[in-house]
Image 1: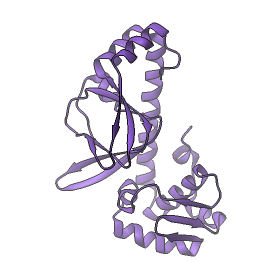
Image 2 (image 1 turned 90 degrees about the vertical axis):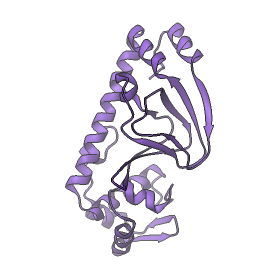
Image 3 (image 1 turned 180 degrees about the vertical axis):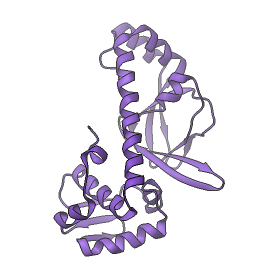
Length: 219
């Protein structure tokens, strides 16, 4: 978002910015609070979640160098979800007012901001399609395939967070997640604690039926 900015505008924006380290499992922001900062993940990972009537769900997980929560900052609105660190994380914090001023004064930054918001919108649509069009077993199978690709397509990787978070992220209960992992044994999926081994990627792919309009992060 910042690479093409006028140097003077960039320096002005950075003068108001600070870098902060947060410990694991710390709730950084709460839904309903005012959006005081734009956050950029420099190190670590952040779980975004929402709560209602005693229920909680994970919405998405941010890793370097994702920004959050841009829409609330640009509209000067409250956060629609909460965020907590999944591990020790370093976050760049940019005051919301400074971001809006940079948007008004720097057309390159403004275009980059619109591009970022458009990408987030498309990501939300993909997540909705994933939840509404696929049973939970297919959602898990596709998540495993994507994770395997991100880990170098070696057929072996670790789940980067606890299984409760994974279940919530995929829109299922922990019990349902366990049953689905048991069902995927027939497709060559082995799980040892957090370590996953894929013995038959072709069979898992036939089950998952990946779709680039859902699964491709760049489409």
